[in-house]
Length: 225
Image 1 (tube, rainbow, N blue to C red):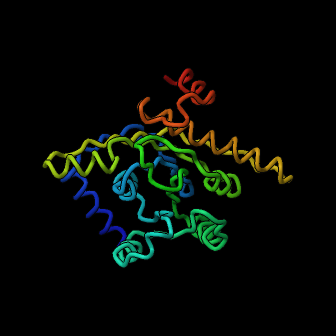
Image 2 (cartoon, rainbow, N blue to C red):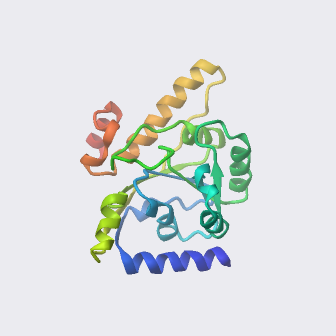
């Protein structure tokens, strides 16, 4: 009940303060278990899943540095944040995610691991692909534009409602990971690039960052311009 009320409050505030264009809503999986993988440009990104999805059972992975702030711990209890170590294998968090998803929760994660300071995609980390491949749940890529902190809050200060575009791509699944360590590392790199390129394909050219010239992105754009 608390999360449902919080989601409604977030939706009200986002509609009041911003203009959101949602594309590809039909691509949201209808199953109870799936993963949302999105780019991360600004603070407001953390609240968009509650606008995009009707689910009241979301779990959001948030960097451990935010747990030091009392207001973030308070928000985390209301919004189901799971604070994780972004720089080291966090086995406790992984086990928690697995348990929660088995109970029907939807995982929301940003493969970049942190906000982009340049407003464009930075290199993705393998944690998302590891979780997706290990659990076998489908991934829905999401591209978000219009939330880069400097521009977003600058517009709010000028009493302009920032326009946010959220594009949801078709869901896809990753193959199981190989058993050999070397092969697994190569597979994780390939899987991470796949996720990031699918996100990049949903973004305007100027936001594709380090994946702008990736062969897989070019292939995706040729098939679905």
